[in-house]
Image 1 (cartoon, rainbow, N blue to C red):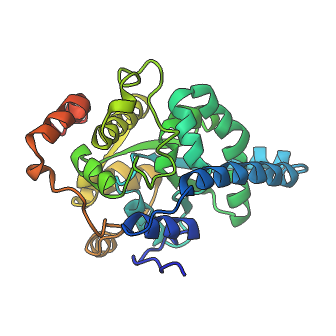
Image 2: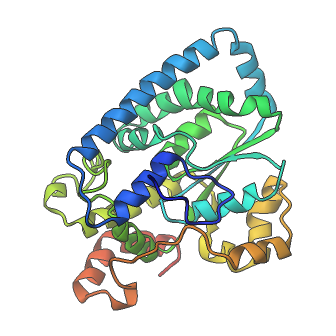
Length: 312
């Protein structure tokens, strides 16, 4: 039996998220072929979802067009562990304000890996599948604002801008050292990560040739800088999590007012005083206690991006 969601979320975790959380943190369990089966299941779900949407939209193409024209969209994109659950939960606590999704469709996981190497695949995924998926899950709600706070669409930023030119996009940023520590603790790109195999640098990336010899720590560093460099180059609106969660005026000016949202300072304070989705265990120390080698690796791979984002 899967454990209940241990966090007091407005956002309800899917069964597969709870399964992965249980598997990720259970060091005594290693399920043979789990990763291969998980990837196969994702591909199967994608096929089933495509068939379902094709049937659903058979006589609704005009409604899809009207929905897209009449709906306001926003997308908050980030590396995983950057505060996306925090922001989603806070917005969901404001009833009837908007339809806000977190990781709306698990097929985004495979699409993320394909988008690393192909902007054409990224565009096709949004244009031919996820746009219709968003319509299916939202148009009956009657809400005129639809948004996703979704780390697994990070590399689809350009595609989202092309398919939803009226949308507002935000790049949610968090200190790379904190992200790398959290991702390392959660087995990212390790033996228990179904996406470890399909995630690797594109051919023109300087780390492509040496990827197979890189440590997991190096690979996680690479992924953080790759995602954030791409997002920084694509999106003007930047939200710093450290300020978002510590300065209400910053939160209001840089996000709420731009979207027309209303979250009072009292509600914001109550929310930040009850942290959500924190890692229950850290499998590496705080960056102040990293070894000189780890600090050097992080500087070599992430240093330029940390400086570009203003952390150094």
